[in-house]
Image (cartoon, rainbow, N blue to C red; front, side, top):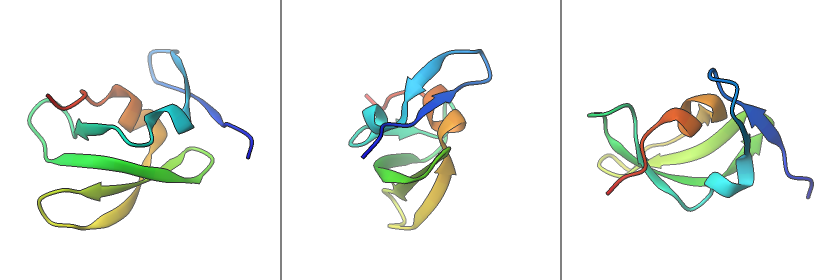
Length: 69
């Protein structure tokens, strides 16, 4: 598998596969989610922890979301 590289709004480049397994929040106060996999170039499959919902989410957004503590 070839690692996809995405560029964030701030111009930062990120390897999408490096986000897999991380827990983040949508924005500063949004829900907690886990990055499950790269679903397609520019998209990650995430699971919203509270609801169990699994959705595709833009890599650019995930890269800017804070890592959960």
